[in-house]
Amino acid sequence: SVPLLQAARKRNSLNLLELSEAELEEQFVRGDGPGGQATNKTNNCVVLKHIPSGIVVKCHQTRSVEKNRKIAREILQEKVDLFYKGEDSDVFKEKKVSEKQKQEKKRRAKENLERKKLFKEMQQLDKE
Image (cartoon, rainbow, N blue to C red; front, side, top):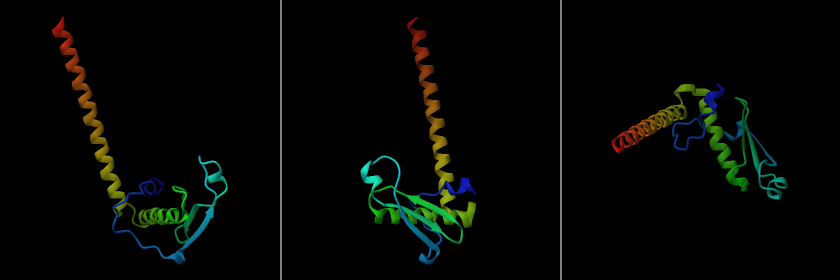
């Protein structure tokens, strides 16, 4: 189930399970990473836990607590949806589609590179 949860954070999912505030446990902690004093002295990192499933999300994407709370809830909602619906989740389906598109793009790029190599080799042969 861990790889499933990594598919979360797709923006345009519509059929997600609703979260009630009673099921959530929220904490504000100091963030980590670059930022110096702004990071080390402010508690603007949001840790959100969904009590029934035990899923925990930590969000420190912005300096604003309110924005981090909103983002954390969006991520948690997607992860909870993945947890309960599994491969039937819209988030999982979107992730699969984007993976296929990415692989197709890589394949086309590789083919174009091969064509360019062949073309250069043919030009070299023509010059000789």
